Length: 147
Image 1 (cartoon, helix red, strand yellow):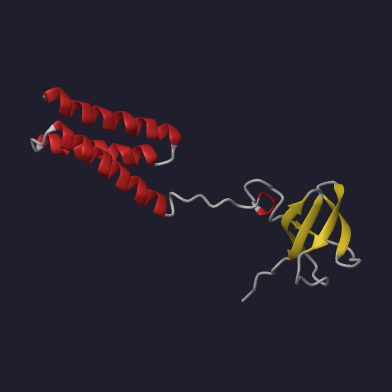
Image 2: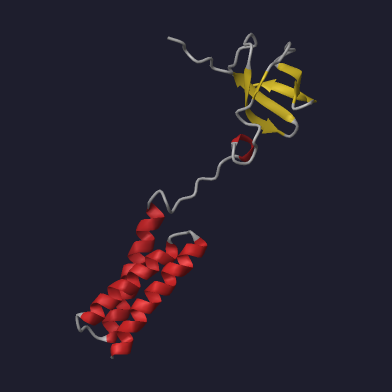
């Protein structure tokens, strides 16, 4: 039954390599089940309990992963996500406001600009916080405090 133990270790190694391609951690959790079964084989436990140990450890590891912060993906609103819209965080000046709306030149073109709720109209610089279609949503840029 020496090949039975080799199966668990080779299986764990293959799962770890496949995990490197997927990047989700789930195959790594199944690989932990394979490692536990390989240890059970070394301890002289039979095949049926090895299968049960592999399944139990893998299921418990997947369950714990799902409950951790790594198992939950938080979807960000694309209109406010700087990874999607590279304009978020950029600074621009707005010459004048009309009912919390304006037109401003940004990146060589005129854009519709809307002031975010609760933001003042008298700031000199504004920071883009979101994009809604072709409208830039801006907030007053916080000036650094100088000591």
